[in-house]
Length: 149
Image 1 (cartoon, rainbow, N blue to C red):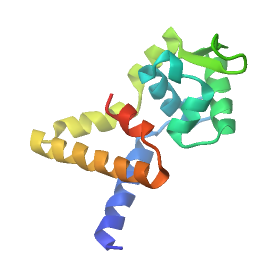
Image 2 (image 1 turned 135 degrees about the vertical axis):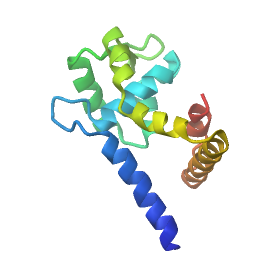
Image 3 (image 1 turned 120 degrees about the vertical axis):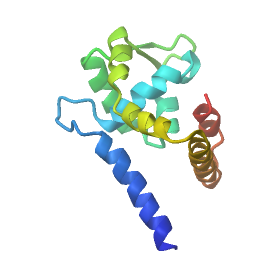
Image 4 (image 1 turned 45 degrees about the horizontal axis):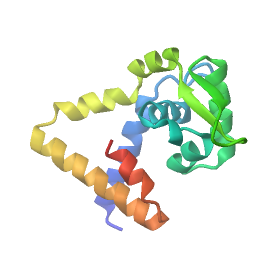
């Protein structure tokens, strides 16, 4: 492994971790932000707990706990899936949608936006390529389609 590549990966991790400066238990946590972002982009037939967990690459249990917390805070609503007796459809509430306006990840997006257009395009293409490589390793094609929305 090339040291510069490891350094770049560590830097990428640090940039993302640093954006979540509010880490208190009453704050929206990184996993919860990911769920809110997913719900903002998901169609009604892919907003059940299983689809969320699959997209995030997690098991159902942590996703279910995070959604319960988001529901208690009024950021999401849950209702039975009319097509399945067991599944639950999760939706953003109006408060959840408003909360996304303060999404910490937007800080990174603004920094990316400051780069010259050719660097932004190279950066976006590199990230898509990394995502596709990960999808190929995991045998998942759904995430790549969602990431392009």
